[in-house]
Picture 1 (cartoon, helix red, strand yellow):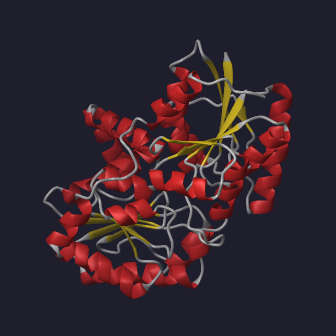
Picture 2 (picture 1 turned 45 degrees about the vertical axis):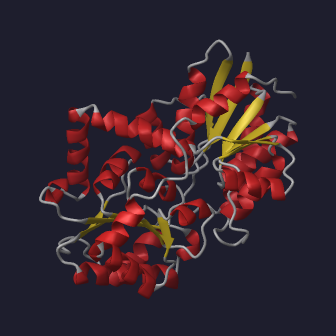
Picture 3 (picture 1 turned 90 degrees about the vertical axis):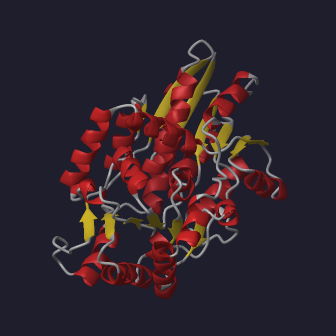
Length: 388
């Protein structure tokens, strides 16, 4: 029996790794599935674990107020060293580009434990954008013995870099997660009502959309946008909400004070009673998918949403200057607007006013997979011997 350890620490990783945990757990005779969370995000991580009913075997619980990249890296490295003293897996699986995944991969390398990298090969080829993620994923890619690339382009990036490990194109596990959650919501009217109630409590009544009202859903939290870029983004959003009073704008606010401060600078101290602009509390994954399914446009600086929203037929405008997901740009599901005030206002206006432009984006084919990625990864491990 192979011991497979999956390590993750943030909400986006958890969303993409929990379906993989569930898939491994279907094969109890072949795998001992061990889950280790670092707690790089705390509350947001725990919410996802609950939704997918995943119970960690190890929890490093590293999150501290005001932590920086040095703290996260050091705590994950030493935390994993202690985990390996009690449990030595045959393979360690990490996801994507977080500091958790890179530090955990490095810790495994120090023990000569093979590493599998889920969502391998994404690149912007600019180590400071996104920062620190671009360097994180490049480092993890050098360590990995098994690279699970979501798309042929990711595979091409790894081949060009002469990655040491084997490379397999699997699709992206985020689509697996999305399908699991959408099915849950579709087949359970009680659960849908519960989500509506949670959204109401968080600050937005979805019943406002019943008469065909449009909704622009916004998320923004990236480090590289903090400062002037964030002020420009928030100012554009405010002006758009005034330009289109008949459209609702909903922004679930990240807990990070760097996000909340510029919002208050632009909108003032009182974020209630802003008419058609709703700042609401951060949402769990389930509520977020529910709200996203009702949105007209998604305006974001998130990585994962660039893959998820097109799976629901939603055009995505990305408030970043680069993206490691050029497949989405090429397929037309995503446009880059950066933190440029004029670009944000122009692109949102076009999608709200121009039916043809809207249809073109919303009907483009999502290049990130068919919801079978986890099965492909597990079947790979069913067919190989992990060597120590």
